[in-house]
Amino acid sequence: MPSISVFGAQWGDEGKGKIIDRLASEIDYVVRYQGGANAGHTVIVDGEKYVLHLIPSGILHPGRINVIGGGVAVDPITLIDEMEGLLGRGVAVDGSNLRLAANAHVIFEHHKRIDALSEHGRGKGRIGTTGRGIGPCYADKAARTGLRVCDLLEPDVLESRLRAALAGKNEVIRKVHGAEPLDLDGELERYASLGERLRPFVGDVGLELREAYKQGKRVLFEGAQGAALDIDFGTYPFVTSSNTGVAGVAAGAAFPPRWIDRSIGIAKAYCTRVGEGPFPTELDGEMGERLREAGCEFGATTGRPRRCGWFDAVAVRSAFSLADAQEWVVTNLDVLSGMGDISVGVAYKKGAQRWDQYPLELPDLDGIEVEYETFPGWTEDITGVTTFEGLPATTRAYIERLESLVGARIGMLSVGPDRDQVISRGL
Ligand code: IMP
Image 1: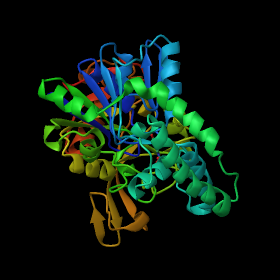
Image 2: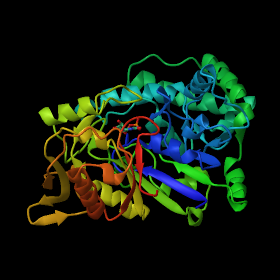
Image 3: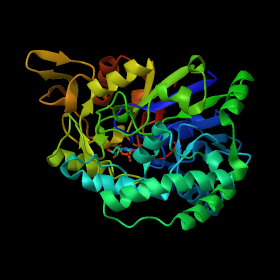
C-alpha cells in the first residue's frame, strides 16, 4: 500500500519509533504531521540509542525523505540541536533527506516560558505538560497571532510580527506571572539566525508529498503522542494540543484523507501515561512499580517516571474505531514476563451504565469503575522468540484475547528494545 498512517492507540510512548523505523525501510517518505518536541521517539540500532523529538525516524535510513509537516509545532532550537546531534554521530541530514513545511508554526522562547509559568499557576489542576511550549504555540495558531516557519525567513515580516507578539506576551509574563520579560532585540537576532540555518529545508512540502504519492511513492505518516491525548477525543483537558490520530494527517501533512490507504495502531501490552489526568487501569501499588522497572518506564523527553497500569481495551478500542484501523502492533510484550496473573480492562462502568468505548460525555471519567478480565501470566524470557508459535501458550492466549477485545488483528509483536526483536505475523 502506498500510504500508511501509524498512530499511538494509548497515552503515547507506545514504542512507535521502533515500529516506524522498521517500516521505514520499505518507504520513500516519512512524515510528522502534528505535535512537536514534546514527542520522544526512541530507536535502537545495533545497540545504539537514538531519541528523536522532531525529525522523523526515517532519518536513520539512507535514501528516505523525512518531512516535518505544517501541522507540527516547530521549535527551531530543538530541531537544529537534533540535526547537529545526528550529524555528529555520522547520520546524514541535509536538503536531500529533510524537508520542513513553510506553514508550520514556530515555537518561540516566550511559548516555552508561558507553558512553564501557566503550568505552575494551575497548581493542583496542572496538566503535567512537557514544558515544550506546545499548548501556547497552538493557541496562538488558532488565535491567528502565531508566526510560521516562512516568517522566520523574511526579516521585515519577522521583525514586525515578533515585535507585536512579544509585546503582548511580555505583558502576560510580567503582569500575570510576575516574571522577567524577554528582550525583543535579542530574540529577533536569535530567531533570524535560526531561520537562516533552516532555509535550505523549507518549502511547500504538502505539494511535494501529493506529487510523490501520485507517482507511486510510498508515504508513512508518523503519529506522535497517542489517541487518548488527542485534543478532541482524548481525556480533555489532560491532553496535548493537536489531533494525534489519523484525523490529524490531512491538515497536518496537506494530504487528502481519501489517499490514506492503511492505518496501523501501536499499543503496549500494558498501559502507561505521563502527566496528570484520568488513567482508569492505573496500578499505583507494587505491581505498578514492577511494570515501571521492568519496562524502563521513564519519559524519553522529560525523564519523568511514567504511570503504569493494565491494558485498557476501552481506550484502545476507541482509538481503533476512530481510525478504522484493521491491524495493530503490540509492543513491550516481554515486560509482562514473570509478572504473575495479567489483567485487562474490558469495559468502564458507573452505576447501571457500561461503556466499551471511551465515554466522551463523562468529564474526567468521574466515578467510573473498570471491569477486568484476568489471565494466567508466563515466566519464560521471550526476548529471543522469533515466531508466534514459539511463544508460551499463555502468551498466545493473551494476544488472541487482546485481538478479540479490540476487534483488530495483531500483525507484529515487539519482544525487546532492539530493531530486530520483533515477531512478524505478516504486517
Ligand atoms: P504537552 O503536549 O507538552 O502540552 O503536554 C500535554 C500532555 O501530554 C501531558 O500530560 C504530557 O505528559 C503528555 N504528552 C505530550 N507528549 C507526550 C509524549 O510524546 N508521550 C507521552 N505523553 C506526552
